[in-house]
Length: 176
Image 1 (cartoon, rainbow, N blue to C red):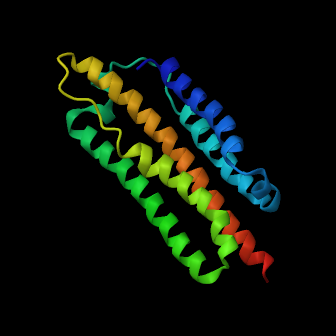
Image 2: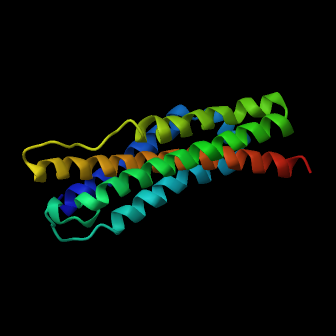
């Protein structure tokens, strides 16, 4: 993949996040829990770092270290495991919040829990890597694109997870 294409994918991911978050996040929650804006900024930082860390040299996809036959399955497992880790953390928060806090609080964080699951497990796990192409270079190019999309989606999921955690923290400190 050309470096400019890889960087463009990150730019598109950041722009989408800038619009997605405010559209699907209730403004009342942002007003009530302003710290959740850190969950809005976090994916932008991660996507920005990904952008910066993309080299300037064009490398054939066959030469990409992550997409060597022996590394592709490992990369898939890493992304899937990260999505599952987000899910586990979100479910743990859900269980704790239901036991510790009132029902209204549980309703406030459930929206972020659902978003984290949609962008984490819901998008990352079903996107499989492409295989069985005659043109291995083309298959690798598509896989690199899918890996970048999955990484951006994972950044979104972490952002929503952070929002849920920050609501819990702000609620804990406000009850003291």
